[in-house]
Amino acid sequence: MTRIKICGLTREADIDAAVAAGADALGFVLYAKSARAVTADRAAALARRLPPFVTPVLLFVNATPSEVAQGLQAVPNALLQFHGDESPEDCAAAGRPYLRAARMAPGFDLLDFATRYPQAQGLLLDAHVEGYGGAGKVFDWSLIPANVGSPLVLSGGLNPANVIDGITHVRPWAVDVSSGVEQAKGIKDAGQMREFCAAVREADERLAREPKPH
Image 1: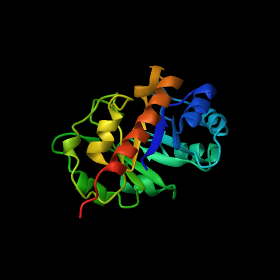
Image 2: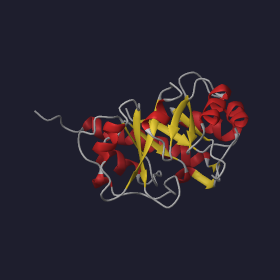
Image 3: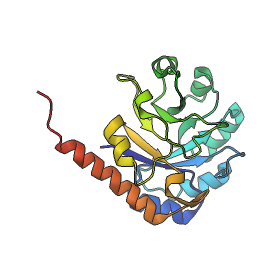
Image 4: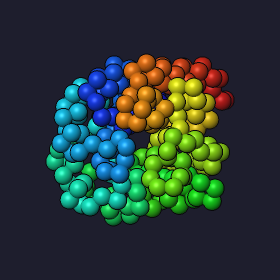
């Protein structure tokens, strides 16, 4: 079953709608330059609405150790996600499970990247654009090598219309969506979140019906 992460939430109503749609994880952006940024205290207030088994994720971009610690103090059960230029040591410093974002572009060696971050719980594959984050752009999925060895989270320009293709091509552990289910930056659309989650389930059903190789 492909897991679903919805990122960049800022409102209580969107939290409730994302959970109702079937999201497995919800992301809070603790990066002040982002249009979807929230403070650690605001992330904590939003995360308190989550039921059991829905994971809060705190997204950082080149944060200081004290900023990471502040986020974890506010949301103690969070998974961390590093989206900047963090070294393996930076990511491991908090001693917490984390995802490491990889900015996919021609010539980028994902296999080497994966060996440098062996402690990452998964690699989040996003488009390479100016600045940080994927800017809602889809990258060329054929750039993903086989046998990466780490669980892959497919991100970058996903929406209800293309996520089935993404899952079928990449077979990721999880998918991550932000702008693809929004009315405006940081303002989610409940209907699009439902459509996205339903499309992921449809993709899983299609894969389950495929004949197994002998």
